[in-house]
Image 1 (cartoon, rainbow, N blue to C red):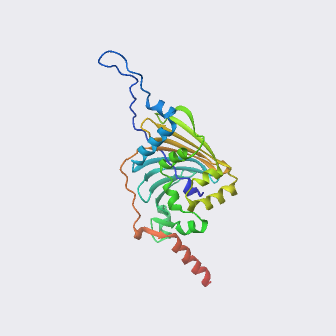
Image 2: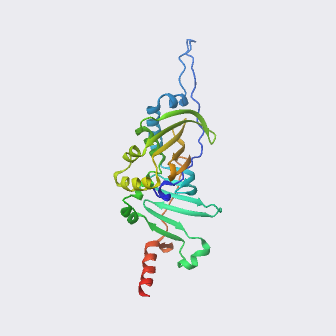
Image 3: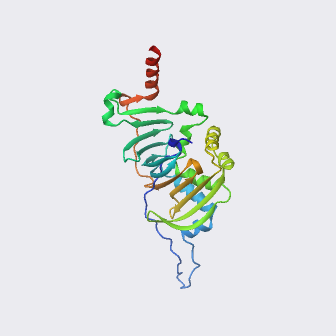
Length: 278
């Protein structure tokens, strides 16, 4: 997996969750049996609760993401918003080790990187650098557009639903929200079997090269059946923590205007032409 595909950072801001009433009294004065709280159900009914989480998250068309960790030996720090429509769109701000920020937009398999203002004069005044990853994906046996869809927090829930051995680690507070923490460690072969067939060969090649033997997925779900945090531990390939907030908040992510865009592939062709003529 490339840094761009696996590293998309996902952070979620908190909606206040209402506690479920523990017990009620009938008009006759006798107490009815105590009803379990949502957190208790999340801990006791694992499969049912994860299915409710899929359904609740599927209803959201956007989410705010904060991601941190390492990928491919590089530090990852990103924050932004996802439009979970078709295709998946994202606008993220990546911060490097020196604190410099870069805005990146992703529309399907096409990435637009904002060119720093000081460098635009040397780029024909263009604001955005366009990189279409479709061709690179075909060469690597991977579908980057499909991988961007996997930014969707619902995919993390479905991973736990499909895996054997998912465990409940208990109740924990994440960014002020009460959650239940789940975890599962999946052998590489099992993890690969869950991937889209178009992705499998390329991902297997990179994981094998990096010496990855298994993937650990952790998920924290709140009382509204929404993921608040997801974490991936991929051995030598890296580890990522993604926090999710502001589900359903209105977002607008547009493809940059053609007049403001420099196509990276076309620029390379021009450079190759210059080299060949010398």
